[in-house]
Amino acid sequence: MKATPAIIEAENIKKIYKRGAEEIAAINGLSVAVNRGDFIAFVGPSGSGKTTLLNLLGCLDNPTSGKLTVNGRTVHQDGRGLSESQLTRIRRELFGYIFQKFYLIPTLTVLENILVPFAFFRKEGASQDVLPLLKKLGLENRMNHLPGQLSGGEMQRVAIARALVNRPEVLLADEPTGNLDSERSREIGKVLRQLNEEEGLTVLLVTHNLELAAMARLTISLRDGRIA
Amino acid sequence: MKVKNSQKVGLFHIAWKNLARKKARSLLTLVGIALATWVLISLFGFNSGYKNSLDRDIDNLGFQMLVVAKGCPYEAATLMLKGGTGLKYMNEDVVKLIVREPEVESVTPMLMQVVFDPNKGQSGGLTAFLGVDPASFPKLKPGLSFKQGGWFTDPAALEVVMGYEAAELEQREVGDLYLIPEKEIELKVVGVLERSGTQDDGTIFLPLQTLQKIFGQEGQLTSVGIKVRKETNLAEFEEKMFKLPDVQVVSLTQVKTTIMTLVSTARILVLSIALIAILISIMGVINTVLMSVMERQKEIGILKAMGALAGDVFKLVWLETSLLCLLGGLLGAALAVGTSKLTEYLIRRLLPFAPSGGLISINAGLILTAIGAVVLLGLVSGIYPALRAARMRPLEAIRSDEE
Ligand SMILES: Nc1ncnc2c1ncn2[C@@H]1O[C@H](COP(=O)(O)OP(=O)(O)OP(=O)(O)O)[C@@H](O)[C@H]1O
Ligand SMILES: [Mg+2]
Image (cartoon, rainbow over all chains, first blue to last red):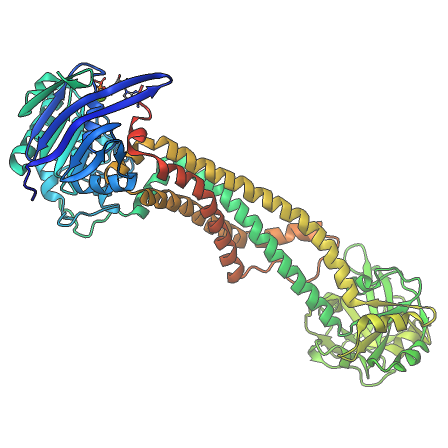
């Protein structure tokens, strides 16, 4: 492993969106370091740049400027970044993603949905046997159901399982409970916490839900594209 | 419950399930492709089937050229093929002129007579009698074989050989007597032919001299069949024959070409329809796949976030297109085979002249080629939607429907 414990390091990154002549600095000179085993919740008002930051840290998007290092590799420096396919290779080695919407394939069973990532990529050491994962997420009795037969909380747990089959080091979750009631939200929070504590999974969470944010080990507030 | 260790979700499985999502839409596209394939296979099957049957009909005639009296209708050979009416006569001496030509291998003089028989069928019908020369005719028609009996015993014998259908219609066997309607002469049936699938089936053969005598046409012929030597240039020989007085020459290869030209005009029309059908079904495929790609933008974004490379996504969408086309092609091929009898019946009613054998010949090679062509077209039409999907960036795709 690397000498530095940080798995993601952002130094003075900016993300500028152009809307016609207008420039919006969604992320405006922000520095953050994410260490292995962290569980961080990013909170802040709407439009403060939470989603933008998460996407930059998760290599779904390139910053406009600044320096971003992921797992010791420079992903972006001074306006020069990696190509889309290079980013994909980093993503599939390191990251798992879940979103507010679950984006499960409706004609595939729970088990099949979870196995979809293997159609493209199978990380070394990632087991085809996903039963332990299904058990951990309380889905072992649901694996032959179609997504339409599940509750929202179960669907999100399927999405989490799918994000985890390739044993990522970091799970990125953008408003994972945005579509769920408070009971289900708590369930998801517990799952994330458990994964962090038991498996040492690094979790980066974006949420409006303060109760969920409170389950993280660290909360970072954003305002106008910076750490408040 | 237990998870099978062999459980795998491959691109193929995902593609297949994607098609199953919008069943009605996939099915409609499939039917479009199937119809295009059906038209394609039927069309090319017809092309080769028709040509084969025509070739066989003409080969069964045994001679490449027919000399008939001048003024005989242009489609004399077609008349020959069909059974013949409106005949003109020429003198037997023409045979001597023809055999002088070095190109001629053998000739056979013929006299055709057509008689209305009031007892035939419900309202009467025509019976064709062909007077043939027992010495030369059988040699020129090696394709004819006997179900019973054989050829005449004597060039002037009072005997008949009946075509398969004629014998069946008249219910005659070898040894029976036969009376030509209105003529009070008893003839003996000495042979019954096997079915040949040509007009010979309905014909009653008599020795040439006998027929000439019965109908008072001594020394007259309606046609002379000519077999030329193999190396003969048919066009040049025809030129020569044109110089003979009072006769005209009909080359059967020429007739065949004429018929094939007629048919190919019709074929071009059908081919254009087929092309349009194929174009429409390709547009259908592009539309279907593009729509389903657009509807799945977020999912595709997730696939990319999960590690699918542009090439993986391209393959997935391409696979969907090919699957659609392959299934449509198979369905169309099954349809073409299943309906070939019906298609043949319809074509037979539409064509000015149809040979007697099978009109549509569909073989494995044709089916494979057609399915291959359809899948190839599918692959081509899948390129654009697949590229669109492959080029989607995960973030844009995921964000695409927000707000
Ligand atoms: N693709 C884009 N094009 C232009 N502007 C964008 C784009 N994405 C985000 N922005 C802008 O950047 C700013 C930050 O957006 P972001 O989505 O990161 O906020 P957020 O904190 O996630 O908000 P919310 O809580 O509502 O999800 C906003 O002003 C937003 O309008
Ligand atoms: Mg957001």
